[in-house]
Image (cartoon, rainbow over the protein chains, first blue to last red):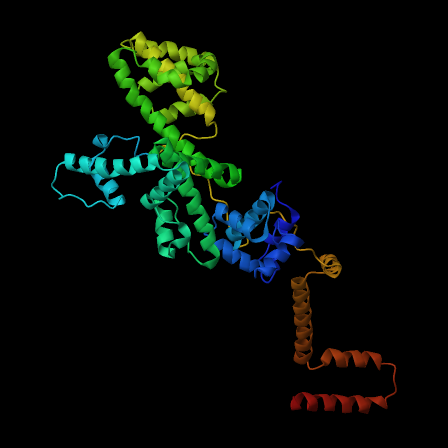
Amino acid sequence: MSSTSQKHKDFVAEPMGEKSVMALAGIGAALGKRLEEKGFDKAYVVLGQFLVLKKDEELFRDWLKDTCGANVKQQGDCYGCLKEWCDAFL
Amino acid sequence: MSLFVEDPAYLSKSRLKSDLVAHNVALPPTKSKKEVYVDLHLKHIAHNNAAEFSSDEEDQEEDVADKEEDAEIPDPSCLTDDDLKAALLEHGVKAGPIVASTRALYENKLRRLLQSEGHGCLNGVEKGVLYSDSEEENGEKEDEESGSERAKEETVEQSDQAQQRSSQFPSGSQPVMSSGGSLISSQAFSITQMVKEVESRRSLTTSTDSERELNGSNVQEHWSRSTRLDKPIVDKYTINNQSLYYTPKESPCIRDMKLSQEPVEDMLQEMFPNTEATPTGICATRRRPIKGAAGRPFQYAYPDTPASPTTLERREVERRLVPFQIQILVFVIVACLLYLIYVCVEDYSFSPFVALLDSLDQGSDSEEGPLLQAETQDTPALSGQE
């Protein structure tokens, strides 16, 4: 629990609804903009990609890196955030 | 390339067949002898090798690479979705749906697997590389993923490994007994260091446990006993003396063998101090509960729903007011009293009321007498009407 940020806690606390992709942990303004340009404008679209990759960590990290250039920490934060959200609500 | 390393005579018939097919060589009749396959193999593949050696190094590498890919799988980007999925499955990767967004990822993954396999073939041990890949993947996964997520699986794996080791010990004990202790050193060779560390500490506490083991208790019971460190050592000594009496047939070599086993088992106990003794030896940790769903606990402790100031005030005021139920009760009692009074008045036909009037008008003129009479006449009339 010590490694999760406030953003992570906020995201995992409730259904994501129509939250923007920048509400994801690890995704800031720059990465969020790149994702939106690629068509991933909402958090649920990224969730869709996460689920299509069968929640596999390695594949999702690679996809994040390829799509928006996230570094290892950002990849890990985003993966952890989505995984925990799925554990809670899926 | 493995081909110029291996002698075709040492390959199996089926392997020779597959190699010939890979090099597009016509197969001989099915029932032909291995020698025929070996000859064909030597002819064609040796011919290819000779061609490789004679050409430039770059060409050689290309040929090797091409042949390797032909032997394995064509370029991942040229594969169809189904072929890509099948190729990944061959390498032990269960791929999800291969859609537009996931295709590139899976192609990269397949390329990585092919490259690692290619390096493995150059070393000449294909199967070993596959195993090492899987181990590496597992190792990487364990490093990447957080400890809380994999902890359960690790404990299960560790418990399985422990179970396997524990099962090895009883099987190992029998040959040791028969050979007279020659295998003790071979069993303990890999863990002598840890044994030395633990032996001095545990030898006292475990000697009694070894006796009990010989009497037929489980290995798990032994583990659970060794965890009870709060037991006084004096009791164990006395028990030890008693058990010696009860089992006079034990030979010292068996006891020594058991003692050498105990440090190993205790080492296991040290390694997995949290595992409790279970009858099946399987440890399963409770899955993290789903948060937010009906009745399940939240992972984060959020404060109770904040009450607005008005609600807080209302709560305080309500505490001081008389409770609602008591109010109703009092109302009902008062209503009953009033009704009783009304009934009483009705029964006596206002006579007490009239008596009151009489007493009030005692000092009045006689003129009021006919009025009173009129009143008394009126009241019976009224009561009669009612």
